[in-house]
Amino acid sequence: MGKGDLTEEQWQLLSRLLPPLPRRSDGRGRPWKDTRAVLNGILWVLHTGAQWHALPKHYPPYQTCHRRFQQWVRQGVWQGLVRRLATQMQQAGQLELAETFIDAMFAPAKKGATRWAKPRGEKAVK
Image 1 (cartoon, rainbow, N blue to C red):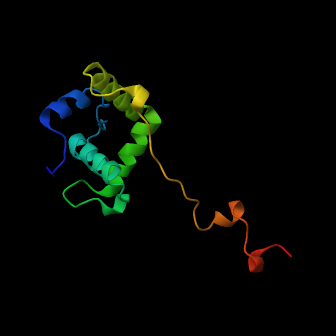
Image 2: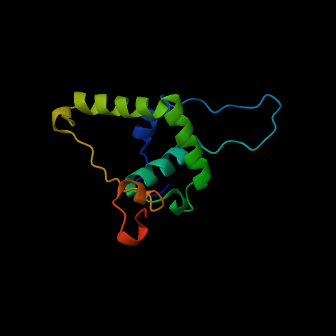
Image 3: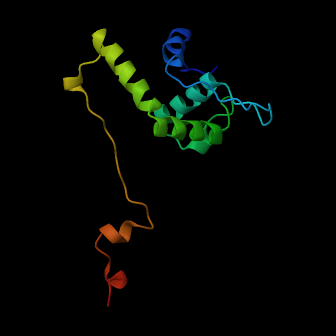
């Protein structure tokens, strides 16, 4: 368990909101990585803003964490987690939604940048 990972209390709150791991009836295939370890890896990436492949080695493989994160987003699990935590924090007086904002920075990918930016003279259509 790394520094900043979920405490036992936090894990108990969130684990009830996560879907159970599917099991194959024939017992074949690799066993799924521990959900708590995967969630800690996802939270590390989201907290640091690092790329998935920079995930420290004490977490499950970054591909596993990224795949599970994508599944949870598609299934609405991630939105449910955020809503639950926001509601709990609001009830405890730790969050005032009127004072809440999300900060993000967007930059177009280098390859697509010329579609939005005015091209330089040598790149302009002739």
